[in-house]
Each structure stands twice: as structure tokens, then as C-alpha cells.
Amino acid sequence: MDVMQPEESLWRGAPRWYLWDGGFMAMGTSEGVVPAHAHHAIQIVFAITGRARIAEEDGEWRAGRGLIVMPDVVHRYGAFDGVGAMVFVDPESTEGTWLRTTVTEDITILPDARVELAGRELQRFIEQPLEAMDIGALIRHSVASFCAGAPPARRLDARITRVLKEVAESEDLRISAETAAASVFLSPGRFQHLFKQQVGLPFRRYMLWRKLTRAMLAIGRERTLTAAAQASDFADAAHLTRTFYQMFGIPPSVMMRGEFFVIESPFSR
Image (cartoon, rainbow, N blue to C red; front, side, top):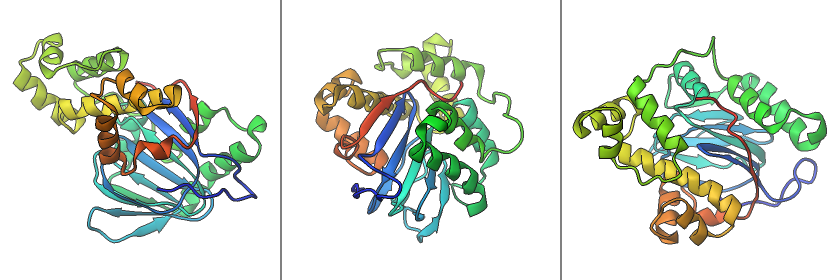
């Protein structure tokens, strides 16, 4: 996804990346097609101007001002050729669980009317930042606008919730399935079966995703791939680049063209 020159009437400067441990929001202008990829986050796209395009791995393109992609769904993405925002939500957060109980399809094209309210607040943030919501509240508001009913009660097994909390709080992401299993008094085989059943992907793959989200924070802070790879337990910059491309469909060098803001997670666990 190549970065365009911004529209003079709405966007000035480089794309902005608001990063937290477990997700991010990117704002700016873009063009091009991102090839097939899959990531564990729930992806929400708001096209403030123009329309975004989305397709399953071998499916037909669909377009809309807003769209939601569920976790671990292989998809291709066509940038909005205008100004937009993209939010990646941790599926295991309260808001992620809420979204997963509301959205029933792997890929959902949102009606324009559902996008309008969030779109207006995002545009206000771009044009009048001092008068707009703060960034955390804006992200929560944008995500909650697509959630129905009250936030659901926790549905994950308490043992898996404990492991997820330990992973989120650990500075060292070299946690093996055996170590995680022992911490909740399960055999490795039983733990791995339960983890995949509850979270939707194998523990090892989940840990790779967590390392990647940690690497994105490090890219914002360190500004070099080598330092980011070391900070997030990747073997080297090449390993980080390959993983980044597999999960996001773009190389991390695209991300490094932007401005970075590290914020507290807007979502609760």
C-alpha cells in the first residue's frame, strides 16, 4: 500500500500511527492493493473520503465507506484512494468480544449511515484536534458505534484468560506452550487444544502475533527494524519483515514513513 500525497482540503503531512500493545489506529491517505494476508486483529476501516475495497482471498471486490474484517480471515484490501482511518482491535479485549458477538460475517460492508457518525468525529479530529475527543475516547467511540446491545460477559475459559493476561504483562515473549500449560495446571496437549478452541489459532501462532504487535511499538520508538526486531524477540530484521508481510500484506518500511504516537490501550481486558 503506497502512501499518496494528502488531499489539501483535509489531510496534511505523513500518515499517523497511534500504537498500543495489542493494536493500533492508522490515519491518512493511501492507494493501491494489499495482497492476500491474515492477522489476528479485528480490522475496522472508515473511509472519510472515497470508499474502501475488500475481497476474500479468491472472492470478488466489494466497496463501502466502512468495513469490518474478523480475526484470522484471509483477505485482500484495496485502499480508499482518499482519507481514512483503520483500527485494529484485540479480539480478546472487552470491545473485541463485543464486536465478535455483534458481527456475524467474516467480512462485513457497513451501510453508509452506520459509518457517518464515526466518520464525522474522525474528520473533526483531523481538522479541529483541539475541539475533538481525545484519541483514546475517539477510538472507543468509533468501535462502539458498530456494537449492539450491552457489552457481553467474559466468555473465555478462566485458564485461557489467565494465560492471555500473563502474556500481555510479560516483557519476554519467548513463552512456550509447555510453560503456559504448566502455569494453569494443564497438560501441553490439553492446553493447546483448549487455547485454539477459545482463541481461534494455535498458541505458537498467537505468540507470533503478539511479538508482531510488540514490534510495531518498537518500530515507533526505535525507528529501525534491527532495533525493533531485537526489542520484540524476533531472530533478526529479516524475520520481522517476513512476518509483518505475511500478517499485514505490506513491508514494515511502509509503516516507517509515518508519524508515531504511543498511547495507552483504549480497550479493556
